[in-house]
Structures are given as structure tokens and as C-alpha cells.
Amino acid sequence: MPGADTSPDLRLAEPSAPGRTDARGHGDGAPRSFPRSRTHGRSHGVSPLPLRTVAIDRYLETIFCIAAEDEPVRPSRIAQWLGVKAPTVSIGLRRLRAGGWIQTELDRRVTLTAAGSDAAEAIVRRHRLAECWLTDLLGLDWASAHLEATRLSASLSDTVLARLDISLGEPRTCPHGHTIPGRTAPYGELVALADLRPGAVAAVRRISEIIEHESFELLRTLAAAGVRTGVEVTVEPGGSADEITLAVGGRQHAIALAPGTARMIWVEVVGPSTRSARDGHPWAE
Image (spheres, helix red, strand yellow):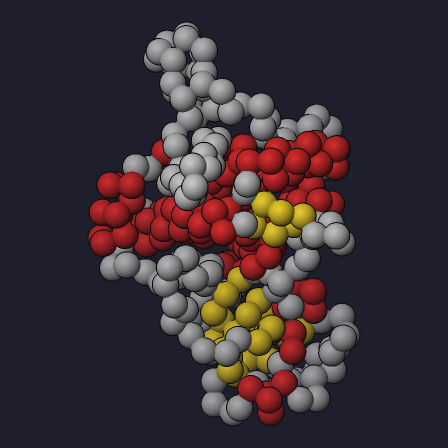
């Protein structure tokens, strides 16, 4: 991302000085340390992992989300996701590795350790439950809910989060169809919308984290056209290598999507088998 480097500063691991606002917005003048993550103590006298900061949480969530898209998690992709420069990410990853949250493979792929994975799942669970609250109870559109959840989720106490979860009926997915960590998905085998042949009918189940993270306007466009989780869509005949046409929710009019966009919308086939629904489409890679 051009312009100033907005990466979270991983040097914020020390408690805030008196009279200053810390990274979580506390500004009452009293010294505060950052909230401690769930302690991952180790046997044989080895010290537990260090305190987590807002910055560490952002890196852990980013690594988790990229990996969930079946992408190799490399420093360049993390930099792109966070909108920062590569040297900044290199410094950040070095500190996460020293803290025991990640490990780096020989090909530079980044993977979460067991402790890092536990922490990332807790962060993502909090974010997705906040999205459910904002859409289901407060009526926000799913693009706005993602932005607001990013701002609000860290401030929710575990007690409030647990009450929210119960009041929402313990949802299994967020509004975009991503499984809430610790729960099982309420759908079967998914395929990319771009892989369906003309005439196939499918129910939208999941919108890629990539769209959710990188293209809020596209999220709003999809929602306005009725393309949301649970809605049935039909691939119309006449598609090409440049455009896929859908009838949405039984509507007479259609929406046209670029194949790249359709590849980031995951659906569950209705009626015929998944294999037959995928055969013969004109926009296969």
C-alpha cells in the first residue's frame, strides 16, 4: 500500500507509561499492561509465552485467515494483507518467532505453532461472533459489520462474548459463512462458483476472506444483488471466459460476475451431484 507504513508496532509489548493512551485505548493515566493471553505454560520449568499485544493479534489473525484460503502464507502476502512494507513484516515475524507464536519453513512459509494457533482461533472467534451480533441483532450490512467488528471485538470481555454467543443461538458461522472456530460447518462439500456448469443450481455458503478483507465495495455489491449466504443461485447459459451470469434467488434478472470473483464465492450444489454440476463449464482454468 503506498504512503506511510501503518503496520502495528510490535515494540508495544511493554506496559503503557502513566498518563498515556495505550494500544487498546486505555487513557486513565494509570499504568496498564496489555491483557494476558491464555497462558500456554510448559513443563520442566520453561516460562510461558509472553504477553500478547494488539500488534501480535493482528499478525496471528492475518496468518490464520490467509492459511484458511489454502494460500501459502509467506511474508510478501502478509505485507500485502496488512498494507505494509516487507521489511516491517520481516521484523514483526522475527519477533513472533522469538515469542513462540510462529515458525518459518525453509521455503519461507509461515505456520502457527500450537500456541499461535490457539491464540489465532480465539481472536477469529471473537471477531466472527461480533459480526453475527452486528448483522443479526443490530442490522448492519455484512461489509460494515466486518469493519465494525475489527474495531469492537477486542474490547468485548469474555463474559460479554459468552452472553452474546448464547443470545445469538450459538451460531456456527459468521455472516460471510466462515466457520466459527470450535464449531462444525452447517454445510457439506463446497465448490467454487466459477467451477459450476451452466444450468447448475447451488446455495451460497461462504464468501472468501479475500473479498471480505480487500473489497468492501464488492461485498456491498453482492449483498445488493442478493448474493448472500443461504441464497440459491443458478448459472445461466451463455457464459464466457470473461463473465459468468447468475440468476439470484429465483429473480428474473441476473448478475454478471468476473470469473475471478466467482472463484471466491463458495457454494453447495443443489440437486445433481457436485461432479456433474462441475463438468463442461466454459471458464475453467
